[in-house]
Image 1 (cartoon, rainbow, N blue to C red):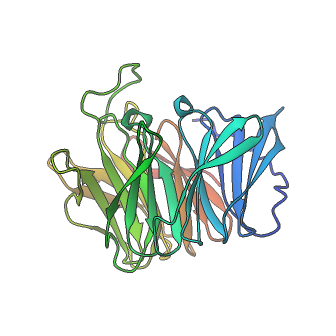
Image 2: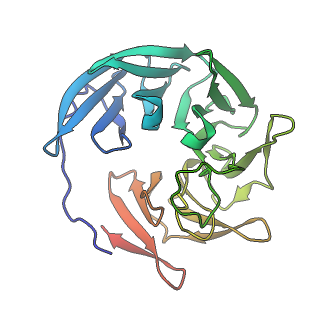
Length: 303
């Protein structure tokens, strides 16, 4: 696999540490957030980010941002130390308004993620109050909240949605008849947990036992896109310097494979669109790319 060996850097204009940067579905825009309490949106013009808008509304450091699928329009969501979740909508080019703002949690909201578009407009969040919340947009424009209380006893650090389509599926214009409604979360209890929505009760319940393999806070978790892949895969990373790849067994349960242990904390993991390349971000600001070989071993393909 060919891997690009060049990277572009740009001045975000933030006045404090930048915590997250996310590109939209088409790769035409990028949103950043910072401890300076602001979110900045940039248009990508000739491969260079051009400032488009500054979004002000949080009262504390903004930890993460996430773009909705374009079928819902230009929507961006953010989470912050101020306990707030804010959903932003672009009403004109460069003009954004808040369409939802609520302290869903009672402590810092550390992670936020829009769900697969096949499930409608939904949003998951993870908080230091130990809970994971699922927000669902209704036809009348309101948002309803379903909460997994005490998801992680010492605080939830990250959350990620499962793909709506089952493993092995290829692209299709037809939505799945029975979409997968699952989440994975991680926390300060050193665990990774998989959650599934019970269609009958409408409640989220833990699927199987907690996935144990980390010896310290699990700082991030990411469910891989499964376009054409034969099985579900989850990546987790932690304060212990470990990155674990969890693969779902046909008979149930999860089997883990570890990457070589890193020298310090690993903060983020992120999958490529196809789900076959994993980016690992260390606390030293170093990012490496990993790919599964034919024999099942994971090999570093970029430093």
